[in-house]
Length: 235
Image (cartoon, rainbow, N blue to C red):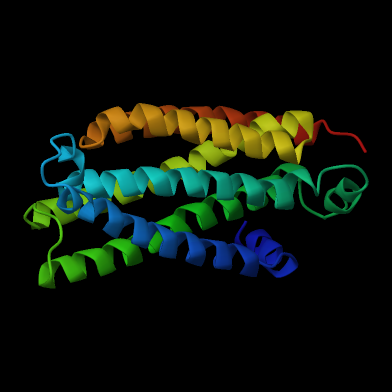
């Protein structure tokens, strides 16, 4: 499996995705500072409590990162899986001296791992810079504590995994139609719906953990069905 993933990395350039991750990180860092400063712009406003604690700020940022990376996962899946299994391109993949399911699994692992690792690294840099400046020149009225940082870390890991699993579900939906557009639209819809639902459990990791279990189950079903479709696919 590792050799197949290495082969996929050699065949496909990830430079454009690295650039997308960098731009997304820079924009999210700026947005995080903007969210933190909102209560200071209008101190008389009473409906800004969610922007006055580190838990809420990091939770909101992680949810938005999840949306971005779920869509990124769908874009990568469209490029590396759907397009390559469309039409005559599949003949080359099926000529590999390994099983079809292993080739597909390697591609899906590459996309899943890139999504999760890239979001974790992106979030780590964002929160590292933010917490570093907050320890010197605090903007948020909350007190920066170790539990708040620990919550941020677990939240980031949970939402990174969620981005990966929902990306697989979006791929499954798009693969059935052999459509790049359907894959990306499915990812956008899933991400937005999850964003709305998870905003209600913003300060509770239990909610993220529950959705991670549900998402993992859905991704497992999608993965199994995709492998079955590839095994029965004719070109």
